[in-house]
Image (cartoon, rainbow over all chains, first blue to last red; front, side):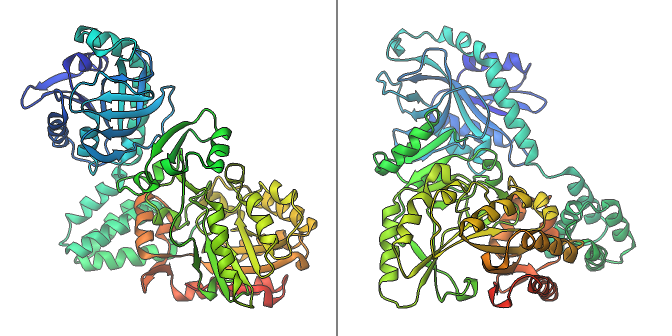
Length: 267
Length: 329
């Protein structure tokens, strides 16, 4: 999971919950432990985009889980209520994002508007923040939209407006929601794993690739064949043996095809 | 079942939108200007959305009915399809929808009346009857409880004397048909693969036996039944499995209740296939003995011929050959 969080007060409960360690302070405060990574972006669109791009450099495989988490104003939800952004608007753009909702949870799903300035006016059923839209725009392309989600905890609303809000209250708003957030994170991570290529396929492919010279076209063919053999539950070890006996890349492809041919029927 | 509903601003007050919202009082409703904002963006995962598809309520504009090549028909020469719904309740691994659409959300067009107008225009002039196929981009019946499609369109087609409608389905939710007097010019077409294949590839689809029972009920009521043996899937024990399937069907249903049988081997536009393969790299079907020819991925010519010929011969034992139609890519 890649957390992108604007303020230290919002990040602290997550850092403690996942026991993250500080890795670096520049250009952004960056924390990590195992597969959990967190960057503190500071407020606003530009900083958020840059923080996402910074975190992208720490990820090598595609389809990782990404989450923008923090506080937000809301026109109708109670203070301390966690919500999921089902639609993300922007006060400077017509473009909206609709993060697909595929997870099980008890949080309300509502619209969220990213604003250029802190907002003290509230419309019903609408949340207000300053980062989500930029976060989503920056992540798109690095992961699927289902794995890119925005979770906010309500910090202000019409009966308790922004003017009465103190930044000191932030950790106290996030902490009671950690259990639910963690369950959500767990589901996203599970889905992310499901989207990763099976390691047996990459391992066999890399091994065979190292045995002979393969042109670009043949290396694609080889990858397809290894993946297909895996799908057909054929022995990938046999592919390595075939490759070892072959005299060049062309023969590897031809021999693997020949070996697979009788097994290409559905059972 | 439906947790999130995206709704175009323009159809918020449409009576059909309101009826659907009333059916899902607990669903989150999110507004959008145009369905394409939700449905079309790149970077969505069809596979992941299949876990929990949302419903998009929208209005279809532009051309609402589309011609179909004669080789895909079942006897008619003027063939059209129309889609009140894009995407399907079921999750069949061979289905082209996975390769065609960027999203697995159910996209329903609520402006049924506009479809009707265009169907009326298409049926006005010619003397020969027109055929309308409703199950190309969705299952015609599986989401009936949400869409009310058949409930609305059957009375409409009943009034047309030169139009046929085919409802194509794998659903056993046939109550709307059981509650309706059979139409002279309607075919309820059920798609089948042998149960062993269905178990592997047709996720969420009722069993073959359940579908045969549903067909029998409708046939006894007087509905004309179509059999869609499409796609044919090459598999071990192909002949035995398809023979068993046909035996199960034809020892239950009388031949005279069968309007038509169509056969078509698995085939897919190349671009769709590549997307499907990317979604499901572990799927054995996509590792079958396929070849790319003229932009279409299909079984090798000899294999395709064998599958079709075998099934044709098996079917001839049960049904008159003039009722059997072969779909060509």
